[in-house]
Length: 335
Image (tube, rainbow, N blue to C red; front, side):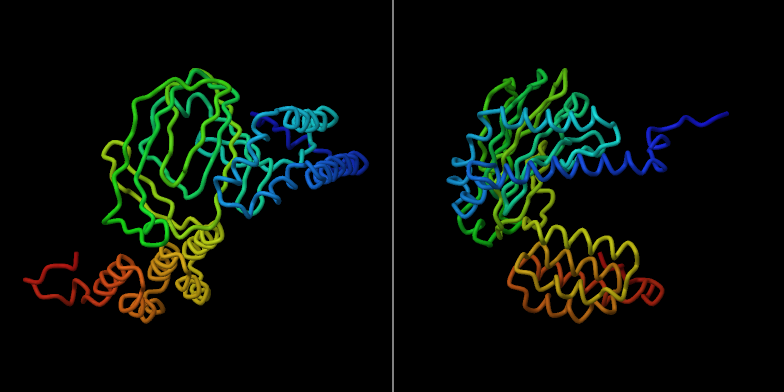
């Protein structure tokens, strides 16, 4: 039986002239877009002019990019023209998401905590409401380009000023509240305080197309995921993008068993972000308990966040408990 051939089997590996034409056409489009975006009145110029403002003001200044779609249509037409000229061309647009049937799309701009993304939600991924709602510190505006016949469920959670300033604790977190579904309307603009507001899409009959503008400056408030059914807090993670990237890298190093990278874990355990500190040390405990022990002890004794101290103390007690083989018959295991 002959295996089916993919489009990659037809890539012009031996046709140097064709590959050169592809590179040149893509580079020309990339240069033209960058020049237009950086020029006065361009997308990146507008973001640079707004990104030092507080999130509400920055969002308001950039809303015109969600109103006039001519620039987006021109950008997509250019990308399609590259593909029409040669199907192996890769338009200079960054793909995002799309894994496991979730939202995917194109990053149109990403600069200084401001991101503009064209998102596609497949109808199948919005048949039923997701189990969790996620809240990310910042502001967002979403233009609904195609509703797909879906309904929207709004989620809300209360966040106090002290929590926003770095005093968030899981034990005191307010519950998440959800509203009844209401029809999603093509053309509508949704504005969110994303630290306190989130949404889910359900019942889509066709694919949904969204243009999302997010303003997410660094924040001491973590990203929080809530169980929608119960309203309870389910997970907390670092909201700073750099901390998030480093956390992913540390998890990968732990999976690879790179004990020689322990200093990287220790360094991240000094982060200003309490969620990043605990993630780094937890990963180091899983990678190399002996190397983690003194840093865990220091965290248990003096970390400024009470729940990080408690987690470190519990983990240190677990590591210090004797193995099951060394316990007497009447001793219970460490929980």
